Image 1 (cartoon, helix red, strand yellow):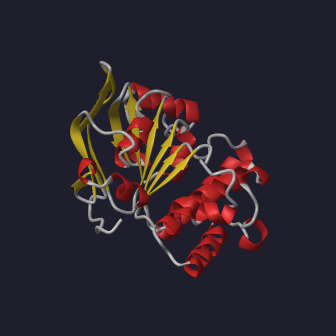
Image 2 (cartoon, one colour; image 1 turned 60 degrees about the horizontal axis):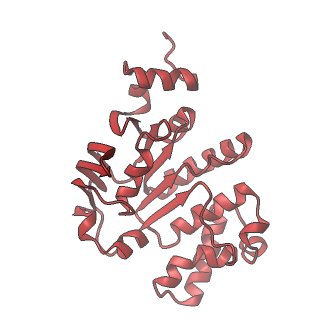
Length: 253
């Protein structure tokens, strides 16, 4: 996006979403600082993905507002907003009839980058996520493993160098070993790139592996927003349930 992202990168100000009388999220008020990895944790249906989609305007608030770069999302041109925010989902969303190289270079292509610049960026990003462009660039998504497709999905989300990256359970469909590997590599990548990342998961161990802060959702409300160390000490019943499930309790519990 052309506008400079300043602190906070994202701000929720009393944001709520209600559809046909059902409240999906209610009165969300919090900020996401530039360069942090905020993990949204909660059970299925607790409001995590709705909250994520408010940031790139796939959903609009029915009350309150969400601001990106100091401007309400409803004031942004939605195409400009979405092209300036990387988005990774569990099944990657890769276009099956496009090669890996074209999938990764799609947003730069839409932005009118020159062909040589796109090729350089694709090679750079594939290398960044551990894939050789010569070996994988001309393959199609169906020819890749699940872990390789997720790597391509991350590369595509980073293609136009967006300041914000949204990730909706991106590693949830992977086998445990591949998932752990992707988590380690993603954490290293996040530290190197300094992007603002909002990451959705229902896996408390994943949250602790990746987060600078953890936001816990229950029934459409944000009930905890803490650093991992402070989250371990939470007395909230839902937080305690997640901590027990992930075996990440403090030593005196």
